[in-house]
Image: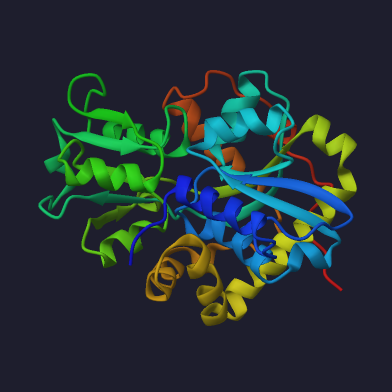
Length: 325
């Protein structure tokens, strides 16, 4: 049971397309749409896209969907703003950080409610205090994983310049490689931590819901320009994504088999990840304003953002709740 890298995933998708496969991207439909996620190695984040592609849910909405996993939230945000990706899936902090920086990004739905992020450590680490003086891996500076590493340091009263080193490494394969080389002693991740624990490569020491009040783990977002120009395409894509999310909740075993083929995990690994985040997967995308405001308050408290903007400016309600026949 091995974690698939983003590079291997994209290479296999390209090869499948060249061979005329109906997997990724799908056979030409009426409307092309390009979708992305902050990382690949997270079941709740990437799973709905992989399942919707595998089961033809985008095709049922007359969409020719292409899915691209990125190396972290900041890179995905840039691609969405540039119009290279129509809908992005990432941590909820992305939209707050982006809009404070003046980027015209809009949250369009909640993907994963609550907080499913985990602290994953080397097998020799037994408690959080053991990480003092060591390095913690995150995806990218400014990403949700980076925010949580800084929150952990503050909770432990560590100086982030002296007592702990926060290292931006990218995807799950890079985190595991650095952990194996003892370059880091821990990494912040989502539900994929259950998979690496099952593999014996790391162990989950804690969940970050122990540090956060009301929270939204993962969201879907688009640029303001994308919302204006591609409203109907977004609406159709949302229906496909949330059809997949409902399938993951209601037919978990079938969904796990389909997702395992694409994410590079065993079925047992996917099911282990589902135990962490399955109960948090949103069924209709409805956004909790109270939870989003709580995320903003935490970012302000930790100095990640400097200004408190009106929370309604960060989202649009055009697409939620997602309606089903």
